[in-house]
Length: 333
Ligand code: SF4
Image (tube, rainbow, N blue to C red; front, side, top):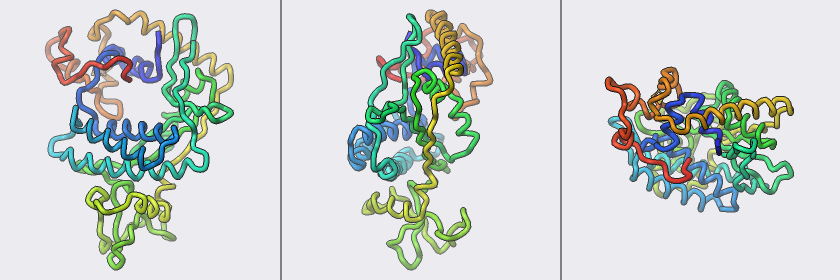
């Protein structure tokens, strides 16, 4: 059996969800999941020798395609087109800024080989591996609304970080980028919006230099969105973010070391036990295991399969395809 951090996390959060996610995913994208999916693709492109503009252009095109078909699952009243344009602006600025952060020696990322756990089970490494570094370190990008120590702790404890590092036996570089919040269907983030000085309209500002952190501009400054400024160069936007020190504050890089051998061995024992559980569930119908009600609303977003589980009548086989889900293509994660 080939398992990975996503399938193991899914199994442990809810066995039903694990069974469903083997074959199905929600037809439409959660808006921020789509942004993160495209940003991760751009980071990989950057680390395969691509330049920032080409990586951003590809990611923006991909985002607009997927936002059109299958579309984004936006809340009522949200204009998906305006939101997609904000996302495109953020791709333009985040990718350019990340390219600068990775200089002078960006990692050379390749797909890591699967790890043999025993004769029957293998671990698919989800993070990409730096083929140019002596340690063959893994690299993982995560995108959060804002940074917090609690989120970092959860990330470090996850199968996607601890599990990968312990099972692959190599360190990981964790890249954390704060992207801001969505408010009324638009992104409130320096990656997408800034203010302009009332007397110097060509000067973009993001943070006040030399003043108390968080002190805001007076209301004589005009709020601007990059998506409304077709003539604005994203490179100059990023220059201004770096001058104000904002881009640097929105990015963190954390080095995760390989745990001691005893901890790695114990992680392997746990993963093998869960791999056996997965194998035993291989022929189960998704409605056979009990619901994990604590997981239904407990993640970043509500579980997309609520429409199947939270209903008056028991679910019927084959219902999934009729309820806004689509079958995963071969190998799709
Ligand atoms: S709705 Fe709840 S019980 Fe059903 S798959 Fe999702 S998390 Fe599990």
